[in-house]
Every structure is written in structure tokens, then in C-alpha cells.
Amino acid sequence: MNLHFLLQQRAAEGRPLRIGLIGAGKFGSMYLSQVRRTTGMHLVGVADLSPVRAKAALKNVGWASDRLGAKSFAEALRKGTTCLTDDSARMIAAPEIDIIIDATGSPSAGIRHVLACCEAGKHIVMVNVEADALAGPLLAKRAREAGIVYSLAYGDQPALICEMVDWARAAGFEVVAAGKGTKYLPTYHQSTPDTVWQHYGLTAEDARLGGMNAQMFNSFLDGTKSAIEMAAVANAAGLKPARGGLNFPAVGVDDLAHILRPKEDGGVLEHRGQVEVISSLERDRRPVFRDLRWGVYVTFAGDSDYVRRCFKEYGLVTDSTGNYTAMYKPYHLIGLELGISVASVGLRGEATGQPRGWSGDVVATAKRDLKAGEMLDGEGGFTVYGKLMQAADSVKMGGLPLGLAHGVKLKHAVKAGQPVSWSDVAYDPDNAAVKFRREMEAGFLPKKAGKAKA
Image (tube, rainbow, N blue to C red; front, top):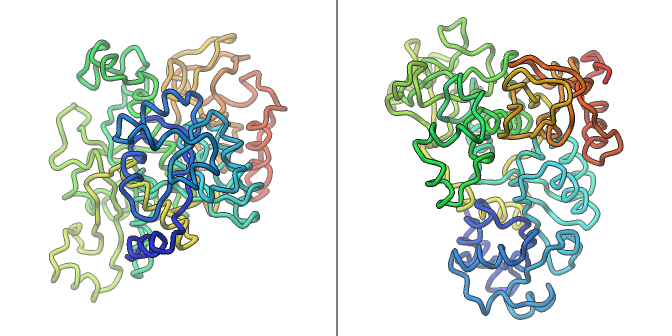
């Protein structure tokens, strides 16, 4: 609880954290709005495919034009300004920068950026949870071997969930379940960019005027983003998905402990230590009372008469047995909170969550009957959604990871609701992201898990 004090010290010493941001989209813009107001941080560079767009994003969140004219990172550091570029590799290699933030959302770019940071000795904060779900365990391993910090992004739900899990365990509690809330109905898995806005109560014109990306928003609605984020949590916190993936039970905050407990105790969980996403809608579309749509939670067990008595004495809401209770955070502030990760990495050398193993994976799953010859269009698109699976099951059946299900052609038909496998698509085995993922599949699971042939 002393990050601000340490940042003040760094500012007083003239040694601010020196930061480079890749990607000036929504998440990046939210961080840009705060970093200019944060003592002890200097945003030396911003890399974006369109520096013009990046400059507009900076101005939109309050940056003055005279802070954006640096021609080089050295000039930016010397003058206290920021250099804009379209060359992320050059920024990662720049000696004037110590911490890189990847806010691109591209799995292949994320892998490339992390490996470049390993070479350059730069810490990296991964807003890019898509890359983390695809290959995070191996990326984090490479980072540790290189002596750099690889961190999940605070403000995004996975890091906030990991913080709650860490709190519970450090206080001596066993974590029973952990996850987040969302708006979910089973039919949403079939949603496409053409149907997404009706579920949000918007017209296509409203969305266009608001600058909203239909495919990106659809990835939140169709369950893909939930699967990606829970894979990240499972791999970072040593938790596991249910064998059938996410169940999205409809749960309000007052019922967390009652519902998110093991089945043998009257709940819905397959096992203790499970990741799960809860819905803000009942299956008949009625709103859940006191829902947790924007928040995160953890349920944990007392497991002794004394602790159960303490739960009661201090007013905790428990299940009927008094053994299970919950903590939750009703909101997350996304990029507005990202500075916590930057400060933790830069001042303490500590990640706000990072993969420590591989227990969760996200497999491309057909939204409708798909025909041979069709082209998959990835996260939030018209063809597939991401389904959470236990990693051992994914590898055993040869599941195609969602992060590589874009721009690849189907060789075989796949029925609606069925997973797509490596053998179903014509992929390029020499593609860098494919090779990296295949390396993780070969090296991260016990040999008894087996592996399907592609």
C-alpha cells in the first residue's frame, strides 16, 4: 500500500518509470488519460499502426499538443514529452524505455512483443489477454528465464480476480471459486456482428456514431471474452475450469456463497478451486437481483468451527451451512487502473498476476454449421466463439485455439456447437505464432495427457 509514496520518491529523484505503450485504442486511451496525471511516470513513447490516430487519442483524453512533438525517444526523455511511432520493435529496443504495455489485442503481435521484450530486457504488462490465453504460460516462462517481469493488466478483470485469490490464500483460506460477472444467455453464443447491437439495446447507427466496433463488442456477448479471461485466471491462479467449460449460472451477490460451492454441498461447482462466470440474467431473461455484471468475486471456505463462528460474528453472508462465504468487487475500471500494474512491475518487480501453469485453454467452437472451404474469422466474428476447456482435454482432442482461428480455411465441415480441431483447418505450420503455440502444447502438459495428431 505504498506505490504512490514510491512513485513520489522516484519523481523527487528525477527517475520516473519510463514507459512505452503499444496500441492507443479504448484500453490504451483510458491509460493515457491517467498516466499524464500520475507522479513518477513518464510515457516516453506510444506505438500504433496509425500515429495520427494515436495523436488524436492523446488529445481526446487531455494531452496538450506541445507534449507530443518529440522526434525520438531520447528527445522525449530529455524534454519530458512523448514520441509517437508506428514501429513497435524500435520502441521496445529503445534504451530510454524500461516497461512496455501491449494493448493491441492481437495474439500473434503479443507473442512477438513479449519475445522482443525478452531480448531487450524490458518488463511487459499484457493488456493483450488474447495472447495470454493462446500462449501465456510459455510467454511467462520465457520472461522469467530472461529476467523480466511479465504481468497481467490491473483494471482488467483477470488481474483483479488474481488479487482477490491471492488475498484469500494469504489469509489462510481455501479458494472455492473465482471469477466475474457478465450478461449471458445461451443464445448469445450464436450472436454475430450483425446481431450484436440488438442485445445491447442499440441500433447500428447508434454504434457507428459512438465509434463502436461490432466484432469486438460481440466477443464480449458471445462468451468468447469470458472464456479468454477465465483461461488467464486459471493459468495464473492455479485454478481449473469445469470439464464442460463455463456454465454461467445466474447469481446475485447475496447468493455467491450459496450457489458457488461444490455440488456435494448443494452448489453448482464441479470441484473446489474452479473458475466460473456468473450471469446478470436469469435464463428467462429476468434481471438477477443485485447482479455482479461489472465486477469480480471469490468464494472461500471456513473449514473450522472457529472460523465459521467468526464469519457469523462479523456479519459475513454465508451459505446455509455457514462454511462458505464470498468477497466481491462490484466494478472494474479497465485502463483507468492500469497504472497499478505499471507501478508494481517498475517499483517492486512484481506482476499483478502471471501464468504459473497451464490448466485452461480456449478452443474455437462453431456458431453454426460450417462448411468445408469457409474462412474462419476469429474472436467475435460470424463463424466461431471461444469455449473454455481444461488444457489437457484441449490438447488431447487437438482443439484449435481461438487465437489462431482467424484467416484460416476449413478443410472439413464442423457442426454447430462442436469444437474445431487443428486437423479441420489448413494452417501454416511455419507461422511464428503457430510454432510458438505448438511448442507450448508439446512441453507444458504431463505426457499422460496425450496429444491428438493434426
